[in-house]
Every structure is written in C-alpha cells, then in structure tokens.
Image (cartoon, rainbow, N blue to C red; front, side, top):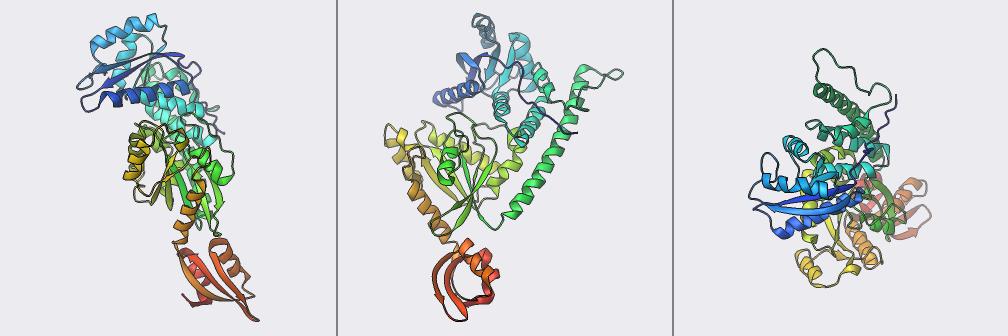
Amino acid sequence: MQQLYDTRSPNPPSRAILVGIKLRDSSMDETEESLQELQQLAETAGIEVVCKTIQPRNVPNPTYFIGEGKVEELKPLVEELNADAVIFDEELSPGQNRNLEKVLDVATLDRTGLILQVFAQRALTKEARLQVALAQLEYALPRLTRMWTHLSRLATGGGGGRHLRGPGETQLEMDRRWVRRNIAQVRKELDAVEKQRHVQRKRRSEKVKVSFVGYTNAGKSTLFNVLTGESVLAEDKLFATLDSTTRRVDLPQKQQILLSDTVGFIKKLPHQLVAAFKATLEEVSEADLLLHVVDVSHAEAEAQIAAVNVVLKELDATDIPMLMVFNKIDRLTSEDELQILQCQYPEALSISAQRGDGIPALIDALTHRFVERGMNLSLRIPYTEGKALDLLHKHGTVLDTEYTDEAVHVKARLPNRYLKAVERFLVSS
C-alpha cells in the first residue's frame, strides 16, 4: 500500500521566545547574528517572535542548557507575552528538552527542531516529504516529548497506526517501537528513490555536470532560472528550494552541460537532514564543477562561505573544482566588503542574478573552463558514419569542416571521455 506522509504539525507554535547563549569561544556579534537567523527561520515557519534574549555562559548548563536563574526569568515572561513556545539557538539534549518543557510548561524547540519544521512545510514532492519524515523520526526517537503529537501524523494509511499495548509495555516503549518501525519503512522507500536516481544519473553520465551550492537564500534558484530559462521557485525566504532540479544548458561553443539547483545550506545544518537528503545531495558530490553562490551583500558572507565548506566536507566534496560566484552586487551599499572577499578569492566572479550584471562573464567562464577539458583533433569521417559527426556536434566543438568526395575532414575539440568513439577516424592530434 502506498504510504502517505504528512510531516507538518497540525498545531504549530504561533508565538515564541528565542533564546541564545554566548559561549566563551564565540563573540557576541556571532551570537546575535545566529539569533537573528533563528528569527528568520521562525518567521519562515509562520511563528511570530515576541522576544529575544541572550545569556553569556562559559559552558552550557547540563540540566537546562541555560542557567537556572535564566529559566526562572523565562517562566513569567512566557505567561506575560502569551508565548506558546520557547526556541533555543542550539541543539538541546533530550534530557534538557524534557527538563525545560516541564518547568516552562510550553513547547520547547531547539534550532534543529525548528529547521526540521521549516523543511516539513517546504517539502512538496513525495521524495522531499520522505526525506523530511526520516529526519524528523530519527530526531524524535530519543525525545518523544509533547512534540510527539505532530510526529504521530507520519503514520501510514495501512499498518502504520499504533498497535495496542502489550503486557507490561509502557506508552514510551510503544512509541519507540512505532518510530523504529516507521524509520525502517521510510528508509525502504528512500532506497527505491535512490535506485531510480542512480538510473537517471547513469543515463546522463556522459554530460558535464555542474551543481550549485551555497547558503540558503543566496540566490541560487534565481541564477538557475537565468541560465536555464526555467521558472524554478525563487523566493526571498530560507529554504525555498528543497528538491534538486537538473536542466541542460547549451554554452556558446556548442558545449552542453547539466546544471543542478540543490537545497541551500545553513550554519549548524542538522546531521539528520544531511543524511536524509543524501540522494538529493549526491548531485553535489558527483558534479564535475561546483558553482558556489554567495550573497555578497550579507553582513556574514564570510561565515556563510565557511558554513557551506563544512557541509561540503561532510559530503566528501571538497576535492571537486569550484568556481565562486559573488551574487547580489546590486544590493551592496559599500564596495569595501566585496573588495575584501575578492582579495581572498581572486578568481571569483561578481554578478547580480536579479539584474543580469555579470551573467555574460559567467557564461564565458563556464565555456572556457570546459573548452580546456577537451583535445584538438583532426579526423577523416566517411559520409556513411553520420553518428560520429553527430557526436562531434553534440558533445564537442567543431572548429573547421572540409568536404571531399569520399569523406568529411573535421577539426574539432572533444572531451576525453568521447575519444574512443572517434579514434578510428583520427588523422592526427
């Protein structure tokens, strides 16, 4: 029976207090910027932020993450502001989460839980819903607090409902068994999706693959639409794109590349999501070139670059050639930040995907990069070998053609992967 997943919460929080903690190895600026991003995440999830607060500590409190005095401050604040959730800008342990909910008597979320909630709202396709469901279930397993009421909606239409409690079985044990069973089922369905993706990739393995990477809301989807002529959703919101989209792009010198738009990254991206979106993110790890799109107008552009590099390391994609693209130059109020980044990344290109600035230079850079991948060849191809001529025009760059009575003499540039198909026509190289 087909499984129908609804990863959204039926009663999500509507008014939240955000709590950050400044540890001794971080600056107040970094903490405030991270808390501001948490607010964006909350607003993306449809939650109104009624208050933000930061507590400096050397190390987290093992019981509540924040200090006991801060917990006591939050109790009347929750009631006064009519908040129905408190959201923390770090990942809480299951014990800390339970302790805080018990004392504050409202739903308690951490950064990971909030990101999962945003992903759940943004998941449109069956594959994305499966991936989010897996991440949510694995996150929920050690917790199973009051957040469980919305995760129970992941049940299947057939055998996915709760079983009756066995002799001596507690509610917690029953819930854990239910979650483990659903994790196994979701993984099984995702394995089938991954096999289908593998077949699709095999069909297009002969093409050069270019994949966008970048921080969420850096403008990847807007740039993707400009380069491909597509109309992929491009919103000024976090995680507007969850599903990978791949399209063919024809470059000026008759080269063809496959361009993929992928999910955006973020600081402290939950490991559950990286693991769950493995099939989607393989578009990154199997690329011939990464286009790292950076919102150069953002105050924390350097930190966002670092966060993307952390995720690329987790994907074992740090050895793939990369071209840095500084986007949103139309939003710059000062050239100083751009000049600093250009000194660090001298080969980076500056563009505005929204306005079109720098797009011809980017296309030119891609063209020359992939021209260099091929070899110059001289070939004598009989008229009966039309497939060889088609291959040259489709995958290479034909530089010169001379027609004789018996054959076509062609000078062309062809990527190494296609040499075997034309080597019998080779005159000289």
